Figure (tube, rainbow, N blue to C red):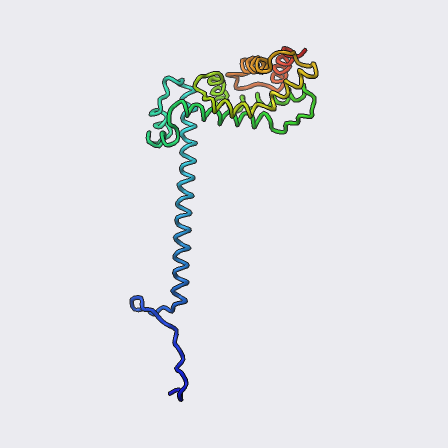
Length: 233
């Protein structure tokens, strides 16, 4: 008996099977369930993303090896897919054609090369010092990554490389171009077309180091000095 007072309201309970769960507990359970689902889908999507990234890397690695060892004509998309251990459909999800694969791989490797060349680059140093340091780092990259460097050399002047790829590479090479341009302005480097000077230097150095698995620091310096002597005024 409550002597006329209003009977206290009891917490509403909902039945779930043989259990009675208060509203507050139910809300907490729903929040926890939503949180678990969000975490689940986040992890799934993260896993899928990582798988996709890894699969693209597998395709790049397979293409690099095949194209360098067997040549462009003998390296079909089907063969690349087989070596990358993925379906041909997966290949075409990433690349619409073999030419696109060749171009994108070329840009990827060329970017890695220029990251190595320009590490610690200081445009305020004397021209000869900039030239020497950049080419030392280029040679070190070539010696440490012979397959990648051979690929770059193979497709350096290939029609397979798209205009979009060439535009990206031209942006990367600008600091190197500026070394030659400054050298010309200061009368240190021959006043020839800069692109031809770079091609000449690259060709001479590449010819000296390509297929060499072991090269001493003394040899590297000697090669670079020969290249410098060829273009200096």
